[in-house]
Image 1 (cartoon, rainbow, N blue to C red):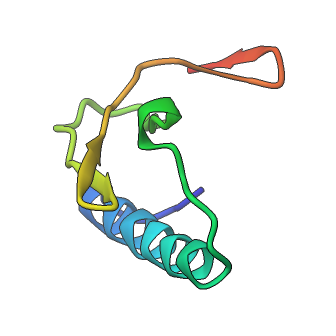
Image 2: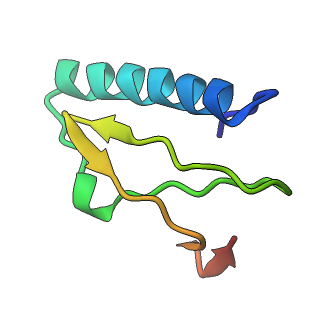
Length: 73
């Protein structure tokens, strides 16, 4: 989760977090499944979706996402 005053700021924080997680997984020889990943913006404003990447692959944006049986969005 990333919070910011703008979508750009929050997306930048989220990308940096993904980069750190990706670095940690490479260190411990683990793999992230980009195909099973998505991101959701929670905001009251309309915004343009800024791409986020893991392993140089773009993660798709979704309006809703299911987590532990709950639909968020």
